[in-house]
Amino acid sequence: MQVLKSDVHFGVTAVFAADLDIDTAVRISANKTVDKHGGTGTFIGVVTAKRNANNNGTIDVVAKHHARCKIQTAVTAGQSFKFGAVDGTTGENRIAPWVAGTDAIELRAGVVWVGGNTGDTAEVFIQ
Image 1 (cartoon, rainbow, N blue to C red):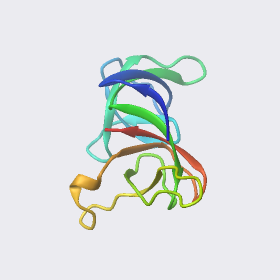
Image 2 (image 1 turned 180 degrees about the vertical axis):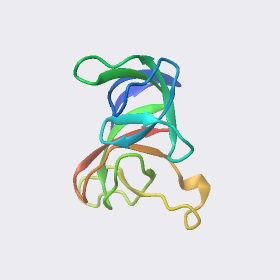
Image 3 (image 1 turned 60 degrees about the vertical axis):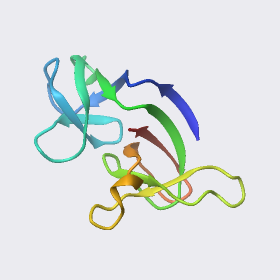
Image 4 (image 1 turned 120 degrees about the vertical axis):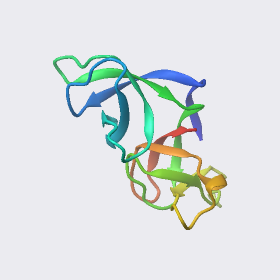
């Protein structure tokens, strides 16, 4: 696992799916993309700078770490994840989907920022 940022909250540049006002609560809607939190999905932070002409803006993410991890089982952006079995060859941490109602709440580690397939590298926010 490669930690990219570490704090209780930090700024991240994101693609905005809509024109979002400053202090709007957001959720992840696609890889590196946020939209207004409307009661579904995981709250990830608030808008701190409105989008520019390229639809990029800044959000203040509420998480302990922004990291890259190897994927054990395919995950999608906005999905909750847990840590899976360590890679037997490299010893790297790997992640897998966390399933509500099946997995214990203590296993939920955070939310996926950039998803991918088995063996790919994901970007995650560890909460």
